[in-house]
Image (cartoon, rainbow, N blue to C red; front, top):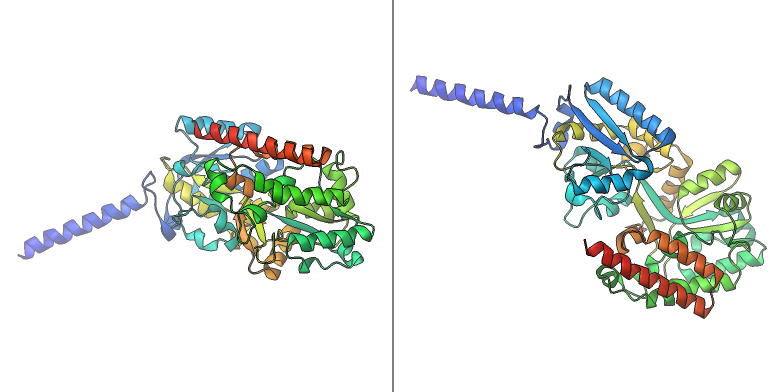
Length: 437
């Protein structure tokens, strides 16, 4: 009996040793949770594809060099520049993707079937609330590490508002905003900044009219299933935009003004608001006028019982190809990117706002300050994926740009109808193209 028990004990020990040895091995199985920090990846090689160009590539290469020295692994960096999206589509078609790749705004909407679910990784608990609404799938899956985010709402020149007797923090809905703009115009300032071909003019704010809580129309299902007729778009956002044009709320040279000129005027206290833009734009304004006082606040609601929101898009976002042969090594690298000194270094190079606490807590940039101030003043704000990415078929963005140009050239009843029809037809064509593959 003692001999049998001894043999059993030896077998148990051998099995335990084999299990421990297997936990250090890299491969498709992957290691989950906090164990990722214990993985030895010395000698492993894997590919990382990024959208970066110029100085951003240089900074990311420095991050890779430090990682390789620390771990003994080798990263093959792929930078495709302007061909990034087409290259990724080609590699998707052949099911031969990079081990890690940036999802550039489409982790759920385009890439999720190719990505590994990372919801059990240790850094998931670091996410800011604003980020989860963009990257968390309906079933709770999270396919990417997002160290920074795009934020889209309302930019405010506080000095102009003060001079005109307007409290921007008291504006709740679009009717309040219209009244505020009239006071600003009467005080001799330009209320709203935009260029005629700015796609965001027709895309970044319209969720408050068309499908968010308290909106006068609920078109979510129609937009997503290809049956949207755009009549409510004409009655909502196009109606308000036309009214603002008639009231002279936009720059007189809106058809020809450049974004650089707009930014200079905004910085020099000539313009009050920019609808549907990112705090990054205000960083440029602050450089032009160090004494300027600016703010980032939510997009306004369509009514007093509607919801104010901030549109969030993926910033620096990295996913792991689910069929990679180097899953454990990839997880080690993603975990490395969450270190405070690493993610902050990348975010400072890109100028984006932190999406995880290790980046937010150590980021002293002006853009991060503006976003954090907004969160403090608006604790109940609604965060949503960028509207066109979630509700429109791919490639609608340039269509909105063309439509904005059309509207500023002719915002008569006939012109508005032409814009509506243009948007409707291109929406139908792009939806059909997206669903015929």
